[in-house]
Length: 417
Image 1 (cartoon, helix red, strand yellow):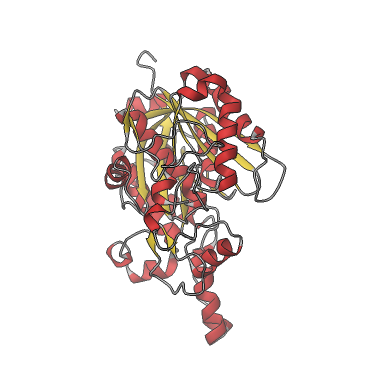
Image 2 (spheres, helix red, strand yellow; image 1 turned 45 degrees about the vertical axis):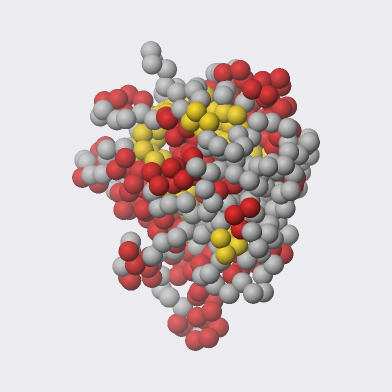
């Protein structure tokens, strides 16, 4: 099997519209959560979210705005950034025979819900004949992988994965397998989500999954903390350029990290609740480590799913202990969601961007708002401030509605390899 490396990163999230801005703010433990102002939330129990602060007109013209949902727009922005960082800004100019081995595998949990809500109102107010001809190609989940492939001329495999909060984890896993097996030489992969809409927010409010700490948005998302009361919705995108090791070396690419293993399981228990014993996530982590060929004591850091919900945080902590045994006490564990909220289907991707940067720069970001320990969450959650450390290998975990569990193992490239 071929070796797979990460050579480019791009992101759009509540802390910034690019990697440099976002990463700098993550290291400071800054807050991306605030009051929702883009629509009326007077009837919603939760009135806060980690929204992307942007002006669409600065990035897309009016014809493009009619054709693209925000989740696709953000993927186009992040993919352009990732390719530029990888030294491939002119990728579309490469010969077709090379681009036949370049793919686009991008996940989303919900897809174009903004367009669905907008056009449903149009039909109700003006009739069916006034629904936009762009409606279907705008809102379909696979618009994101298709539009990225079109924008950059990627002629290889292109598809979208959808498995709730594990969507982009599965996308990255499929991309890793495509490069590892020889199907592709390079893949743009990750995830995008733009579900902070009146209907999307209402659904999660009705499920009583969200924090209602509306009077203190900056303290609302508090993974693993005893006083957590639900997750905070986030939105945005994370894109990674992954490629075969020799392909990267031959073009002089800057290698940020190596993807070493991928584990995917299901609890087969409940459509929304994780199984309390943590066996499913523990098996996913174990499978990722087995495929990577590394032992538990070679892992230094875990970027946790860490949603700030009572059950998830306790069960994920239990799963880490089940997988790592005594070594669990030596792990640094932090949650990116504590700052940018829960990006649903895009969460795995943005969190793997942060995990890659942790390896590359030798520093892990803190878990914001971790102040009161919970006996059910008894690991080192990197409270207070970023921590400089040598990150040899790490896991990035994602757990989704449907019982889906994904763990991705990445690490430093062996200098002698």
